[in-house]
Length: 268
Ligand SMILES: C[S@@+](CC[C@H](N)C(=O)[O-])C[C@H]1O[C@@H](n2cnc3c(N)ncnc32)[C@H](O)[C@@H]1O
Image (tube, rainbow, N blue to C red; front, side, top):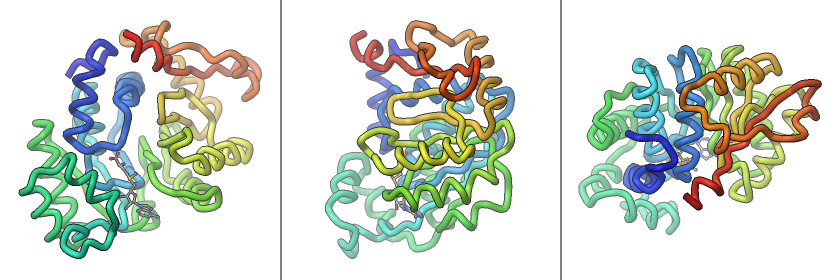
């Protein structure tokens, strides 16, 4: 797929079809980041939901020469069987109706275990993205912390303490040069956003790049600045759409961060 800003509308349609809960600009930011990393083998998604995000990340990773990534998806799966029991509320039902076919809805309602969910996500993502996928589902983050990850995508949690607890639990499982992506870094998850500020002050998160709703962090200032250098050296880097953020020396002398100019992508 073309992941440049020129293809924003098609990326948006793909995001809707997969059921990824993300703006398409963030797919472009992720593509820039993934294509700037020398090696990505392992990816933990905290909040795997229907697997739409995993499917698109996997596709982008394949297309940026990371073709053997093992995904681990964490989700308590309270929405499994939601159609049958009608127990998980209208929000899921509305979104399911938007992105799932009648057959997919029917098969989803019959799942009962994390292994069932892995198989369902794998089949659906491979069919819709034409890309092989390796995914293992677990019910809570503690079950996923027995290995180290290149990328962690934090996509659940409401309150400040809940999100800080997830950051405290999961940062030790991030490789030294890994990237910790926090989703809904906006009014979509205001207290998760707040938790990342506290975590930065605790020395756990060091910002690299602001996408639209996703923010990319490293676990050390050195790793953050190395990633910035790699992004700038990337042939896909467009300095007009990914701009240096004035005032980043708040994080240390000479420290640089990048912000995606997503407004300019929308205007174009
Ligand atoms: C916003 S959705 C994730 C969307 C997905 N990452 C995507 O890109 O399409 C959040 C998911 O996290 C799950 N969830 C929320 N809190 C959780 C927790 N503490 N442990 C495990 N799963 C949780 C919910 O069941 C829901 O499916």
